[in-house]
Length: 183
Image (cartoon, rainbow, N blue to C red; front, side, top):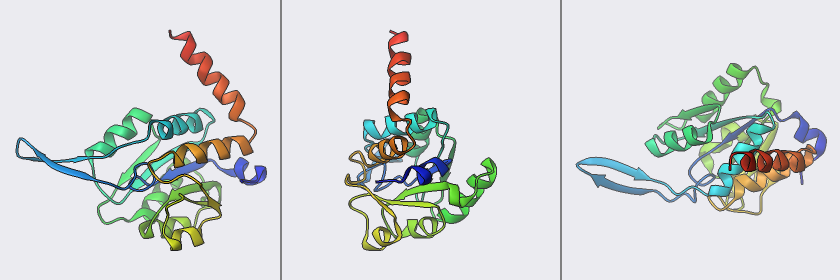
């Protein structure tokens, strides 16, 4: 459960990729002598991102891996910012994003699952843990999701956040109306 006052403060939602927007599995391979990395994304999570953005919330992806898959997914969802850093410097990435948008860390949420997310979770106003998060992440979070990463956790968070803000039903109806208008 998210308190309405806390939900209304959220102006930015940061998302980890591996273990949050995916199940944490990574498929590595070779295609014509080039390294290929594939990830599986839950389609409902993507719609959750779209609906948060329709509510005026900035959404950023902060990941400790570099992957063309992430760039493609971020582009597809039209997220507001992306940071891919193989050294997992997530806190500095978050600070840059928030400065770019003029948002205080207290007005940010972050959904994480593992140790590289702890620095960010300790500074945002709404730290969020997926159901299969590490013990340390669960202890740092004040919102605990029932769904696992890559299996609808981001969508669950979007619904909880937008419902607490009193915006879920109206945003869903606007989304449905816009979808029907294009068919």
